[in-house]
Image 1 (cartoon, rainbow, N blue to C red):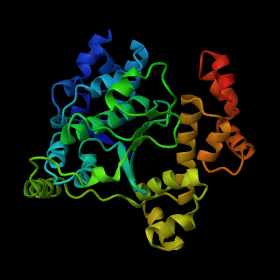
Image 2 (image 1 turned 90 degrees about the vertical axis):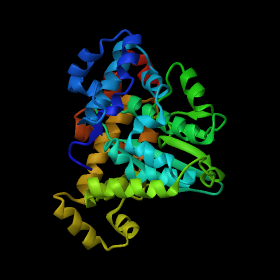
Image 3 (image 1 turned 60 degrees about the vertical axis):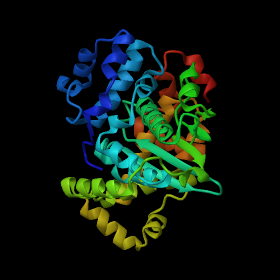
Image 4 (image 1 turned 180 degrees about the vertical axis):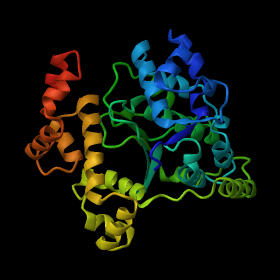
Length: 344
């Protein structure tokens, strides 16, 4: 992933209207988030994906509107996704549409990565929003999954809904918007953020699609932008995120997943100026800050999600990294210490 992931300014479509309705001044909020004002009027301007995440979090906080991003998502159309939306729309089946999202979503937002997993009868499509720990990704994640579900519903009909929607962050005080938009069970404090759908849905045809048009669009995108090659660091980063909660985050296992030996893996990472241990440590620091300050799951659960063998091992590591223990950090990040105490 690029050092500074970029997004099309179309990510801000309908932002101004939702912000005004929430009592905010949109241009001032853009200034504070470090986004050029021109992004409001030009959907193809490239802007910082991190700044977009910061804008959404600031807007929800300042307005007191917890479902700020979902209000934006509810106004979006498939056409808002630009070239990505066109490619998705012309795929012959939902499986092909999802594959197109995974392959070409970087055109829309380089700060989001996807993981696809098929199980017996079900499919998991998980999204990871790569935002700075101090910024948070709650709003960006809800926007991403809201747009995904509404886009699939536009293809399959108003009666379609996922089997389940999961979020890694804590439950908001009001979930009416979540249930209205997703129209299915919604779970929070989960070990991933994504949707679960029936495997049968994958083979459902998309009405009035044209596979030949889809192929031409894909070819044009590949020729215009070049096929996006993931660096070794980005590939390993994705594996680390998958392996950490399983307690299996070791260089040997990551190398086996990639079909190479450990020495080759280390050489590729060295070419990118990093190492396996550095990537693991960086992701642990980022996730720990998000989990400790951003939701209510017990510290023992956080320890397991980060791949530590015990809560005490996690506690020692956290104190060494932050010069404060995790419980104290959680309490200091919240104005209501009684809430923090209940989250232990």
